[in-house]
Length: 217
Image 1 (cartoon, rainbow, N blue to C red):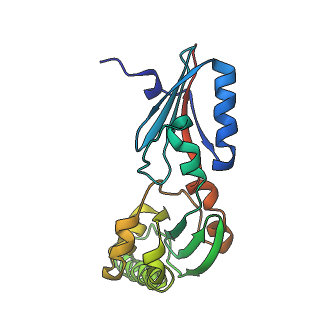
Image 2 (spheres, one colour):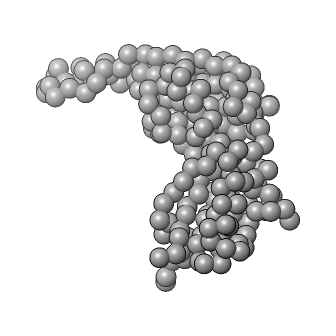
Image 3 (cartoon, helix red, strand yellow):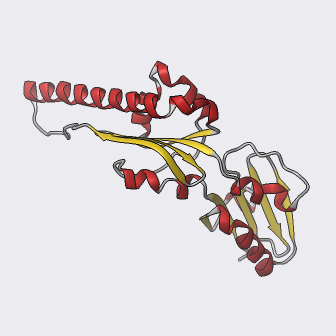
């Protein structure tokens, strides 16, 4: 079965919501009259010359309407209260955003030793110590998430995670954080060790509209 052109994009762009309307207008100017296919999780814009722009809906599902692009621009630009949980070995951050404004947060770190090439009993002792350190770090991350995010649970529209996926899954397995798990949405953010500056930059990632662009050869 032959894949549709939009299944093999030439490139993937991440467009800030504030620039989305202008980007879509430019796409139409470059490629001609467009047709919009709007669904709850994606909006595909197909141009007269065969170009495709498949826009992944941020914070799905979206209820498509009769406005231009099925209401994607308005949906993407709406400010939301979003919880963010970032976890890597030895570091964690939790924060609540109103739109792009960070309203409350807590960042912390715990030392977790790196791997070693040593063998025998020494390596076994090292592995046990490292496992204990990682467990304590994840417990600390869960404590912070419970203090920072859970009190805002009723007002959160979504929870975005980032960092090491296995570490995040371990933290969210904490029984206190079940409500956060239920609100988790993509994308999972690729971030360095969580610091306050890293946390403050996350809206640029989780608010962006991912566009898979295919242009005619």
